[in-house]
Image (cartoon, rainbow, N blue to C red; front, side, top):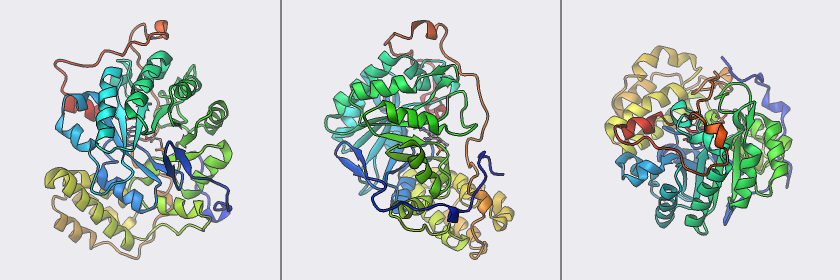
Length: 400
Ligand SMILES: Cc1cc2nc3c(=O)[nH]c(=O)nc-3n(C[C@H](O)[C@H](O)[C@H](O)COP(=O)(O)O)c2cc1C
């Protein structure tokens, strides 16, 4: 079922870009065209998916968030996720950290290793994180936010640093305009706004009015984020808000060709229609092969299973295979299963505006006791040390 509040409308009603209507997104020395960024997504935007999305036309592909704590402690998974893939350019990494003394050396090390864009995650709404004063709780304390951005910008040198935020904690506590001011003052190259509060999680619609207000309030490029399900959503987001680029998250899960459609539209061409199953199967197999190469056979195949569900969502022919796809354990087995699908089955329109991950519900955001009484503090939150399983903690972080 489509979970967006706006019903699917036929793309033919929407116009691709007019000549000169949009410009490349300037990020320091980088010029991103089309101005379309693959969102950082934990458990999703590892190298194999970034590569696919770039090949399909994404202007920039950000890594999943990499925790500064895991990086500092030399956690092998963290370090592996922070590494780029062969030939990956520009390399873009999202840093998650709430202590400037962790963030600065991490950014310096990433830049030394060839990273060309650093994004900072200040939107994570997960209770475990906000309860400690991390994630989307950080913008509640603008002076702490400023210290973190300053630490990253200082360590990054000429490499552009951007920040990614939500609107605020809830309807009563909006933080995005303060964060915009901080981003400008501390030298961030751009700011991405997911137009929802932490309380909203993924429910409701991303608020384009808020994105437009941020565009008017700051002198750096704003990236609009939230609910780009089809190519025309990206153009509409830019037309309605004046933002300089868009960040695409859930809309491309199992649909990396969404970037092909966006790229065409930004070039002023009528985008191709979404692929039929016959074109999807080799894309899915290539993705699964990439996961196996990057993570090893076991972890790669385990990860492939969720992608199988996402790539085949809404295809009636895949329903009978779903249980087997969820158990698939080798690439050969996967290829054999996919060979049973009808290559002529067209892409189901109903699956275009359907969230493949993180459906709508709301939450009451947990903050540390007394947190709101001292919004002027610039002290980093306590981090969960001693006795905390770092791997489990990292897995529980899910970004903004
Ligand atoms: C599975 C998943 C993982 C995510 N992980 C991160 C993350 O690591 N860092 C981050 O800033 N946002 C993360 N997000 C939020 C997205 O980057 C994006 O802001 C959000 O999904 C809204 O965009 P959309 O409506 O296009 O999905 C994640 C979202 C999803 C669905």
